[in-house]
Length: 200
Image 1 (cartoon, rainbow, N blue to C red):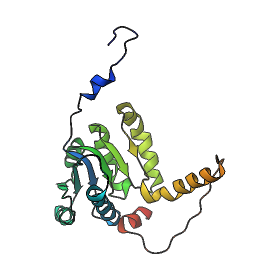
Image 2: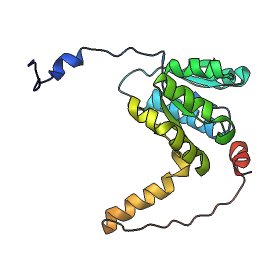
Image 3: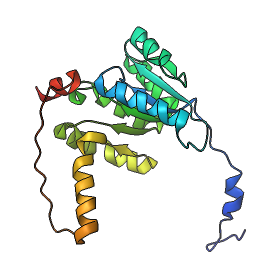
C-alpha cells in the first residue's frame, strides 16, 4: 500500500473483511395477502430448486402470528417468523435484516414506518406499491438520507412496472433507442384486497 495523497488501496486485503452479518438476509413483510403469498411461494421455490450461490437466511414478518406460522409451515425452507406490528417491532425487524420486501398496503396508510425503519437501520427496501403519491412522498422525504447511506429504496417492483419495462426493453432491442413510449393497458377480473383498498 502507498500512503499520502495518491495512496492506492489493495482490494485483495478488503476481501478478508467480512461485514457484520445480520440475522436475516431477506425479510418479507406483510406477506399474508394475495401478492405476499405468491412472492413467498416463488421465493421458497427459488431457494430450494434455484441456483442460489449461498444459504439465504429469511423470515416472514407481519401483524398476525398465526397466519405467518401457517404460511411458514407450508414452505420447504422453513423461514423464521417474526411478529412486527408496532413501530418498535418494525424498527427491530429492520435492524436485523439486510433487505426488506414490504407488501403491506395501502402504502400511504402503513408504508412509511417500514421505509423510515429501513433508512434508520441501513436496510435496503423493496415494495410493490402502485401508489404514485406514496412514491413521490417517499422520494421527497427519504431519498437523500438513503443515498448518503448507500441504500436502495426500490418501489413499484413486479407487476406495477414489469409490463412497461419489458415492452420498452424489447422494442428498444428491436428498433434501437426510443424517443418515447406509451403503454395502454386494461384488465379483467377482481383485485386482491390490498389493491382494492389502494384504489379507494
